[in-house]
Image (tube, rainbow, N blue to C red):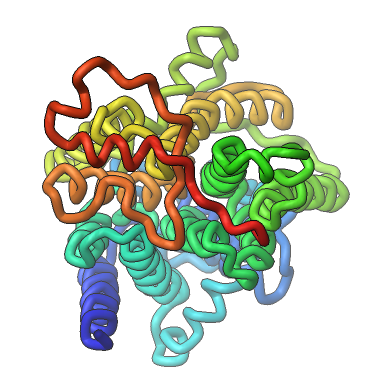
Length: 460
């Protein structure tokens, strides 16, 4: 039993560390996904704590840009061996930062974990990149544990963790300095807390709102995973109360709102939003009185067509971004898109998966995925005054949940587990009308069993 737990965890940790170390075994240009301003924040966090809106980037980031360049871009700046990098007009954002929208949480943790590498003489850029091994290992182990908690064959969890490492998302977020690095782990561990909370584990019920706050302070886009897990918990409680025996149906709304699981879900979303609002207020108070730099992006109108495009943004780019990722990255991401959509459809409308928690999970995840893009686009339009097409990276916190549902669907389809086989009591939706002769078509016992109402102990 212990070997079955330790061995997969060690494999995933070693694979994650090896992947990040191998990618950073030689000097590489900066990532085109804002690594330049992230390096600046990382260098300043031990002395300044917070990078402020309107602040200029420092010499560490400018020298890294001069010496390493940016992948897929030709940038002419000052000499790499220079000691003065004061020509603001040569640098992105007219020499200003673009990372002030983020809290210092990710950068503080990454800086602290990078110090052992710095003590050996390694520069801060490469040391910070190696910390990606920690974030990737935390994410892959979280994916494995989540799939295990969903009662899927453990082999699926190990394979899923290794597949995650092969995605463009893992490459761009964990082998460079990026605020996306924790997002995979955020989604996976929020999912684990959600499963434990559903099983009425009191520590998980209490920790879920706390984890939601941390998730959003790491990156606001992680609110997607908070919403998906929270919605699944809330809908699950509603369905459970709706199908309970008649004595438990009395005062249904009161029972739903006083259930610890639904309270935890509601509190998680509200507290996460409050944390983000608090950060925005602090950021505004710290803004420097300076001329706003030009934004190096394409501004567009937030039209109905744009909203539709954003609604499907994260469903059609699972495992992305695919830009600059090559043929292999495109193939992996495309395969995940097909498997994700197929699994969601199978779990929602497939006859074999009628009812139960899998339907609740898939429906909740799909709803949040479709709402995430328009929500972020509208938030961007309101906060910064313009809209620009969203990056696929913003949905990274949902990747672990997508991978878990793929594992659930494939294992059920291949007969490796019961399609609705969570333990600690099953969840049944209201029975559908039975067609004539259905119980004689093979599997009638299964249908009759599903038609029976769930027996819920009176103390619940």
